[in-house]
Image 1: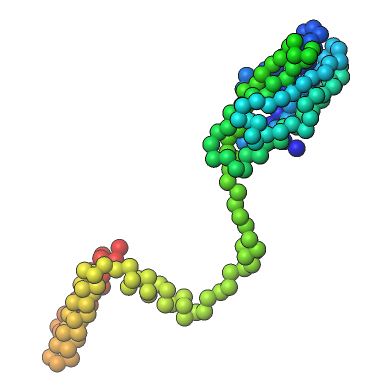
Image 2: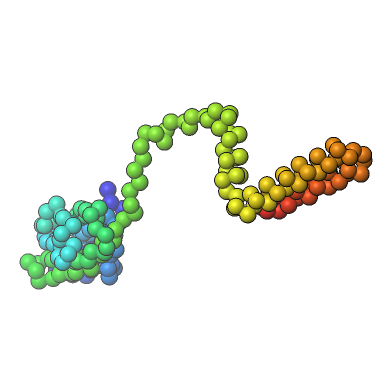
Length: 194
């Protein structure tokens, strides 16, 4: 059942009259025309015109509208194949064409459909623990710039030289120097990676 509708009052003021509050209608799919009868019964003829005829259809063209009753006219619109607005008119006539009302209708493309397959219902398979360790390391190394990698290599060389010096000379001063070199390299790498 379409949720968009337009109402046309038949014989509200006097016999053979048509009225609507809708000056235009914009839809993205099928809609309904409600023919609301008032004082006397009437035969109403409905038709589509313009480019709207290519993508829309009425079940039938002629409808009997009883007094104080509503006759619903479904207008089937196939908007799946359009990529831009399609314009046309919906025309309602009574009294063998003596009275008519025309409503401009614009059909716009609807929201695109999303394809959902059955794989979304399946839980994700857990990855092995080794992959969890390898991914962050690969991301860290793979995401670094060559200059950062060069600074890291020089830092490792400085730590190696400081370690060799501390092992050769020994003593608390060289050990403190090695710690200072290690902390300096670590701080430099953290600042470069951020």
